[in-house]
Each structure stands twice: as structure tokens, then as C-alpha cells.
Length: 508
Image (cartoon, rainbow, N blue to C red; front, side):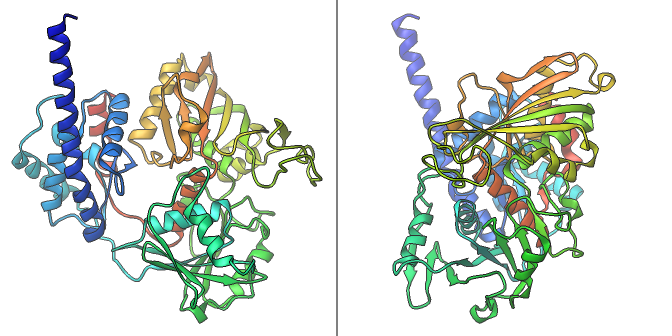
């Protein structure tokens, strides 16, 4: 390029960036007001926009553009968002701004329609679908029994979801009594995390109440020596869901001790259960079986949550004859920094100096949540010296008749569609970068992220590489199960009746 053309290009690019940043700046308060005043959770193809800054909003738009093949930047979606804020017919809704934009614009890469055009189309769509209004009754009390890696991430998620219209409220954490500085040390671990970064907000103390206050949420710290040793009603806690994240009590009898404590109605276990008496649930796969019949549920393991949604989708479309799952799993605090005694084989060896082969119950757990997989899967695991983010390598033999002449592009296109426009978009994500590495997936809310660059297809044999944040992604799945138990399900707009229209706009 000649100097004049380069100068023109530089000017054009900076002007484009400035216009996108200005539009994103305008979106931030609109998204916040919709969330706080109307309980409308704004997303873009399932990726949350609430609490995001302007740069994050631009990056999310850019990410979506790469996968949908449509020009969609903040300058395009801002007019749609502005019209939505003026509508009185939407409230307590999970609103997907990206999918709404495609419905309004018909998927064409043309100039953004006028606000009058947007309002007219939106009003008609809302009348046709008539999204129901969620009754905003008293929030459900949540108690975290244990405050380890998963417990603290659940606390962050619960605080993040608090505010006007919140349906879940973190009321207490239950731990064993520690040192004199116990309260401050617990709060400090919530405030700072070497993997997940700083807490987004402020934390203060009320030592008289033995509580800390996180973004306005008063969180009582209760000391107890057992699940049935607490009287939660003494703290004003009633009808609570106890999330047991200790991993100590895992069978129906021991978990049932929680229900003997006044103020507790339901129990959720953040680990695979022992025995068949505790139902195992993976959000997006079999959470429809949750009912008032059971008071105790298990959320399975992080690996089961990573692979089950994708297995469910692939089996539904192509049929799975058999397969093997190999997980390359980050070390956990169950392992040793240096060689020391451990009850399980090999896990006594230093976690930070070795790759350690160990067993996993993921295949057996998948059979529970997906009975069609019975006797079809094997699994093994390798613990590696990284603190977070794991990888599931799925070698699957599909049904030859259903699979036909599959290619890697076919599988990747299906995975991309699942991540953008399907009921599993909160569980399955898709990445297609040849530079991606494990640390890129810290903080991902999907339970599994398909790495499109690594997909291999040979006849009916498919090999998929699925990343997962074994801490945060799993915690998000636990939250989805808790919301289901509590009957919290925001109506979605656009809803399932619009899937075909959006697929057409996306050329799926």
C-alpha cells in the first residue's frame, strides 16, 4: 500500500473503533438498568452482557461475528437495545440481544433499520410469543456448607446474581471454627484468588454478627461440626437450599442429616454421590427430572458435566455405538505438593512435578444421566501440573448409518450451532483458534468448549477435544441445577419458536 492509502486506512480503523467503543459505552447503563429495574438478563448468543464493561462488550460481539458469519457490532445492536428499554411488555426475561438483532434484521448484512422499524417488529414478535412474567416472590435462601474452591466460586456467582429481582440469596456459609482471625481469612480467600482473580466488588466485616458483607449481601459465617448441628432459623434462614461442597458426606443417609437442621428444605451435593439413592443431575441433560419427590440431588463431577451435554447432542443426532474418554485434568487440592501418603494409587506423588494416571467415574456417571450410553463408554484420567482448566479427549464411534459421510467441518458446524442457537448453548461452547491454550478458558461459563481445530473424523470415528474450566464452569452448572430445584426459570426471548428463523439467518 502507498503512504496515502495507509494513512486513510489508519484513520478509518481508529474512527471505526471509536464508534464501536462509544456505542458499547452507551450499552453498559442500559444493560444494567434492565437488569436492576426489570430483571431482564441481557445476553448475546448466550454470553452474558450484565456486569461487562465496554471493551468486554466489543470483544463478545467480535467473538460472535467469527462464528455466525454476520456483521454484528455494538453500533448494530445498540438501537435494538435502546428500543427494548422503552418497551413495557418485557420483564423478568432472559433476552438474547444477538438473536433478537437477527430476527429484526432478517440476518441480512444491511444497514441497521430505524428504531421505528425495530419497535414495530419487536412488538409483533412479543405479541406472538407472549413471554410469561416471572412472579418475583421472596428470594430463596442459600447456604454454602463448606467454603473451598467450589464454595467460594459459588459465593461469587450468588453475589453476582443478587440485586433487584434476585431469586437466590446467599445467607450463610458453614465451616469449622478456625483461628482467631477466621472471619477475615475466609473473606480474604473470597476477595483474592490466584486462578480466578479478584472479587468484583467490595467486602466488609460485621464482627458482632460474625458476618461479612459482599456487595451489600450479608453473609453469616456459622461454625458447625456436622450437617445436623445447625439451627438456621436462629439466623432468620428458612426453606433453604444447602449446597454441600465439602465432599465429605456423599450418600443419602449422611446428606440427609442436613434436612434435620431447622430451616433446611433441600440439599445439593457438588460431587458424585455414593450409592444410587441420590439422583445425579447434569444441567441441560436430565435436569427435567427434578421434582418435589426428592430433597437431595448430586451435580456429578466437573468431567461428567463437561462431556455429558455433548454426548447427549451427538447421540441424539448421529447415534453413538461406543467410545473412550481420556481426561487431562488439572491437579486438585486432594493431591500433594510433594510426595506423601495418599489412600488412592499414584495420587501420593507430587502434583506439581508429575503427570499422574488415575481413575475417573465419569463414564459410569454418564450412564446414569444418559441411559442410552450404558455399557458404551470407558474412561481414564491423567492429572497434570496445572492449577485449573482440563481437557476431555473423546474418541467416539458413531452409528455408520446415521453418520454417513461425515467430515470434521460437519461436526464443527454442529458444535458451533449448539453453542449459539440451541437449548444446550449454556453447556456447550465452541472455539476455532489454532493458538488456543488451556489458560484461555479460565472463567468460561460453559461446561465444555469444543476445540474445532483439533477435531478429527475418519469414517464414523470422531475425536473431539473438549476444554473445561473444572472449577468455574462446573460451579455455573451447579447454579443451574439449584435454580431448577427452586423453580427459577426466566422466560427466554427469542424463544424456541424462533430457532428455525435464526438458523436460517445464520445459514445453519
